[in-house]
Image (cartoon, rainbow, N blue to C red; front, side, top):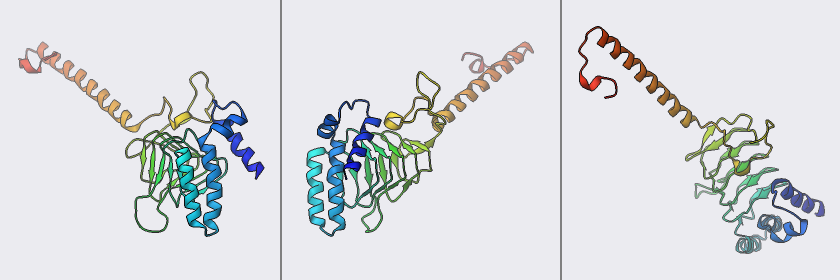
Length: 237
């Protein structure tokens, strides 16, 4: 048990540069507190003491602002940064080494019994305010951008952004001052992510500029040949 606690504390130092001392983490980090409550509530839930488990999770919500259903399965080295407004539904499954920021919802889209919440693979990062909805799967090491709404499966190591979320190409995300790959990207976003919609719009604008240049050339050549070009079609009109 104490080994697991040391692991939970250690991962906070790894992922939050603001963490200074173990005492600060133990006393001031709501994500750490929420996980302590959840481990106990989860055990009670599976012992059949379900009202007691729900009551304990409600106490944790009041104290931390983080709502984790006691039925949710959460792996090791799970980190909730800031935490306020995080909601994790009953049938959620979260792998090892995952990170959630504040305002994240792992929610359901159905009133039916059974699996109705997301499954997160190992190493998933979900940015602030993102909503992952339904019994979908988020592949290992995938990233979900801030405020995205995810309603479909996300492949392994993909990055998704937007409403509804779509895959973007981030390749090797590099830091501002080096060419080395960044192991952890705060808030699951990067300045050099290539959004496919932005790329498409850029291509359309480039094409329009090229067409304008060709039309200007054609009009100038027609004028040289003595063709009377109507005023509205002349360059600059």
